[in-house]
Length: 468
Image 1 (spheres, one colour):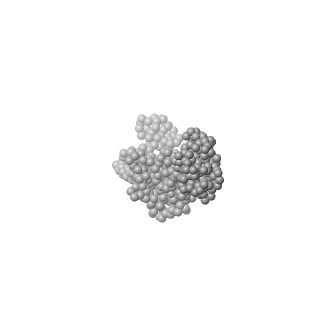
Image 2: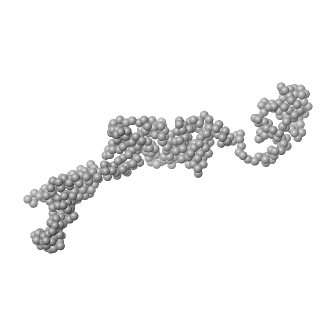
């Protein structure tokens, strides 16, 4: 009989070992957790069977998986609570060494438990397994938070989509879908894990298709240089389904950051564009110089000048007139994405608008506000400088004159705008003493050794030759 009981225990232990091994492998639940669940279930069964289990101890051999349940009872001369106490006489039958106050360990056969107690014990084990399974899944996906995973579309739940991620389901809410994007059951889709929450029903996984980090993670998967850290994605701004701007920088001077992300014939970036259902992606070079970074960020528009204030995080940008609409983009998208990418508030003006506002400096024709009184030794408030040096082309340096200012600052074909001269008016190019060909003069005298095409010996202009 004893041998039969022993064989039965060995058989039960073997079955328990196999069951634990299967659960451990399939559910990824550790053996220690499962043994703890069994121990708690047996204590629960004792509590249901005896009404209390404060003195119940469970021992499970981790090698043989043999289970022993003991009730620790105190030896007493008169037993008041048979669950907690044992009489001295009964204790002496077990061993003569026991005396009043000693603790006797009395083994409890689990087969003596009733059906309800056994069922409750089973439920305790299953509940523990479910809880541990949820925790394992939570830990697994919580570690993947802010990462990209591939899932299979299951069904629509209202306007949300349920996606199977293998061991858990994720929810893609309407707000996290790309505008106009639709899904079919069994369709494979890449999503970005936003958050993982542990609930009573298991982990709740929220995913996104609109988050800017989705694009970054996709480039890490597709581009080896990004994955290895040679090329770094410094900043990224995105309007999901329409356009993304991404600034990249290479730690290796021999590696072209933009070229690495684009790939041969655009193979790498096109693979990501396909995943995002045709979303355009602009890849630019990062620059620590804010002005150059803003110029790059406004690509494909051409920029004339950028004045950036790094403290105020503002920038004034001037573009050619024909590039203004391209720089701003449809509904302001290009400028908006550039501002998010750089972190600067960008004010874009056309060349014409900048000139009208006084924000444009053309260094070929305009000058900064300076004091020119001592310029080359001349006093521009004194008319005596008129007889001094003049530019080789006959134009005055500052286009200003002692007695007046001409509207255009230049002469048209050598004629004065008003046709008036100091000694009289001449019409149709006729002169008082006759008609003279170019560079011929009435007196034949040349006071300074040679007149320009626009000066004459017998008549002085209103504005010139006052010193003669």
